[in-house]
Image (cartoon, rainbow, N blue to C red; front, side, top):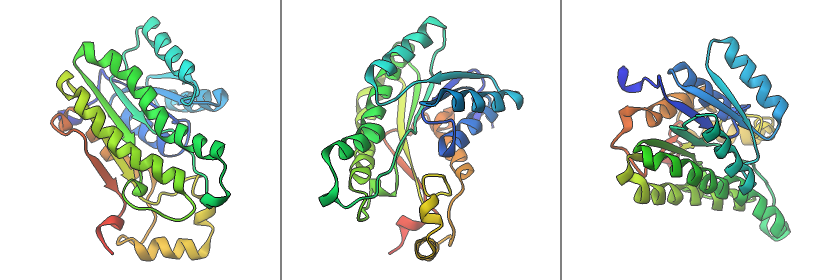
Length: 253
């Protein structure tokens, strides 16, 4: 099991004060990593950090907006000043907007693209600048079922998550020779705050359960095993891949 031991590694998970990011962050901490909680809400970041410290984990706090280029750069400069080396980066921060394209403004489109795709490029770029000289790094981007297929009313999210798949492969193409593995996780329908409206919609809930071979929604903690695997030395020759954790949804018609 030493292959999956993250002791001595430091992991930054964007958007990790709640939801999927929180679950993966805690999973990495349980595997031995020092973790960095991130989010735009400083109070929520501090609360999450305190809860993890109470469980005995080593935790740093970094409240910054991943859609603000200058804030991302400043955060990594601060890590440098404090002697914090980010060995593992999970680009998890994301938002959703459900609206027909013909009713969507360009600003709304850009906000989703910036949060779900451009932020992964910017944060990944800053992390890789530090990882390359060290010859080690793990970058894990969070994709979606919509990295492969589309649904009506979520066009910018679909475009962003499709972009995540090929951004991941671009990262692998450029950074693999420097000892960095860049991969992605594509969650299926998960029980999260973002999906609250869908969970409460009886027709949609029934569709998810009927369409998924596992006949249920996923739980955020069910991403932890894949996240730890991709963050650990167990995946040292895995690069440019996207692993779907979807209860089998994409496997069937």
